[in-house]
Image (cartoon, rainbow, N blue to C red; front, top):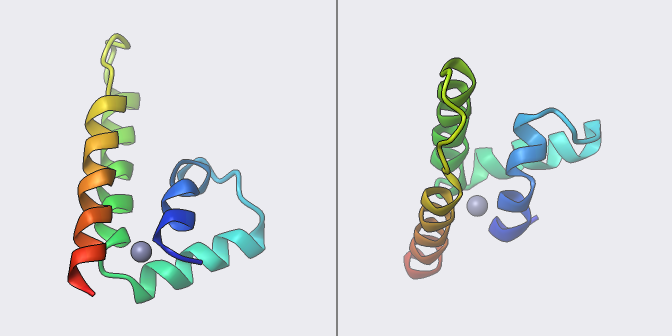
Length: 79
Ligand SMILES: [Zn+2]
């Protein structure tokens, strides 16, 4: 699994929609990759905030896309 695969599974992972095998693969990658782990942590906090808030007209997609793009660029530049 590379970073793209991992980030594609971000939401299914957080929503627990992955199979046990996929969950394991994501966990292994998060252990090994310093770039993806903070994204998962941020996203989880983000979702928890969203779910805890009464307003549903927030549109986090653009913010998230930007964040993921930046992390991907960091991952490429760092190696
Ligand atoms: Zn990664």
